[in-house]
Length: 216
Image 1 (cartoon, rainbow, N blue to C red):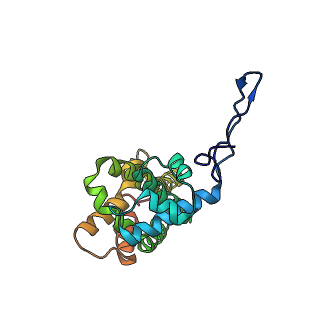
Image 2 (image 1 turned 135 degrees about the vertical axis):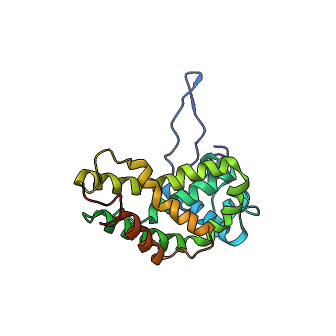
Image 3 (image 1 turned 90 degrees about the horizontal axis):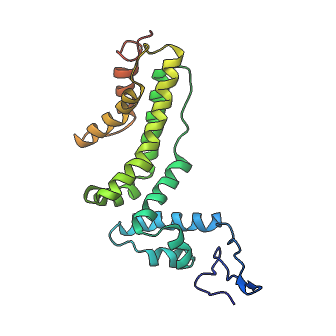
């Protein structure tokens, strides 16, 4: 009989012996339903209890999965929380628009991202304080979450350069950082980060009369 600790819903079964030696069989592929149960539960509990009080055992119990399944996927709580947030962002993050206009693309995408962030506010607040004091978590958060957001703006700016809306030699990477950097500074200044601010950024820095948005 397989060890029950390692033979839960998607566990690796014991290896039978043949001709005096073990025959290694690949385990069953990971069950996407288990993945979804774990990350959804982690996000709900993160919003309810905060990062410090969240425990791996509690997530496994509420998600209805074995501890072995949880720890094979996420060896630490940091990994679990980051993956949960990344999974939710990738699944629900607005698609990058392609309207044929740099200004409209920036405005549309900023508005959608602001609405999306408001929907995820509880989970993000729960992990924000830990990000401030945990360098490893902060680095992974920037790589997995902020990196995905930056890639969207890089795509928008790159398309505008190809269309001739931006002059040759435009620093695509630097210009793509501008919308997120401005939102961050507005947040630090205590100003409301809303759709009005999205229009303010798009009009001032990416409109037809702005420096970056002048047609080459």
